[in-house]
Length: 143
Image (cartoon, rainbow, N blue to C red; front, side):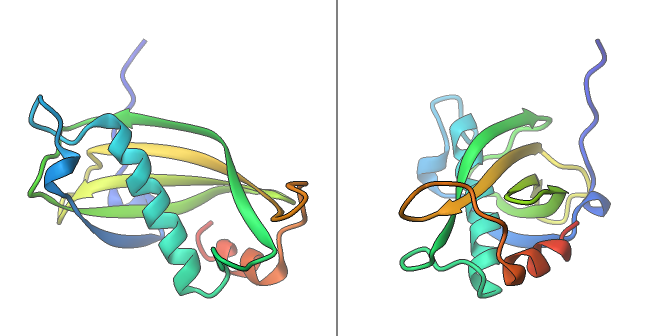
């Protein structure tokens, strides 16, 4: 089985700067694998909040992660400055597959690439709902 190749900047629609923190490093001197999932959440949710389509405190619709994964291509470590590239790979009725690439600042190839699927649900009942029109409009810009 051949190893997948790292995505490039051209594969993504939106970028966000992420600063590594001292606590992101593990005993092996690089960012710990679990920290990448935090980077993914930060990149996607900050974008949705900035676009005015996610109210984390009072919004009636929230996204729950039902699947996630990550591949690693190169090591990063504090004090690297990173950039997260975001795109929407699938836009369903109530679900979205986000793909995120983590790049060293200015690098063309991703150091890591992952995905997660949100199912959007009613905050109270936790039952799936159709994506609100404003959210769908913002997400269509990332496809």
